[in-house]
Image (cartoon, rainbow, N blue to C red; front, side, top):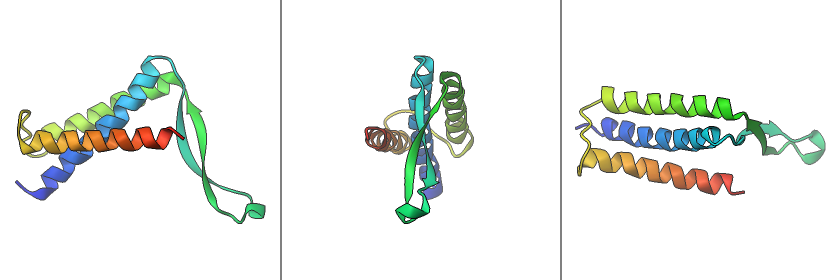
Length: 109
């Protein structure tokens, strides 16, 4: 199987992790911060920073579902993904784990 398929499975895992984060926060009725880049004022030397903007629970639930659909389409329509103890599932779950760890680290600040 081509390495491109493994990259797609890894990407599907990270998209699933993103979907879980948004879906769980939306489903439980919590507002969830999304970070967007803005520029500081000229007095602060025009450095970039991240500002937290709160998204509504409904938006987050919908965004989580969209992420699940995209990840599912990537898995089911590209290559011959086999669920089980194989390299396809391993690559997917590595993407899911890395995506989850990165988001927990990113949003813990």
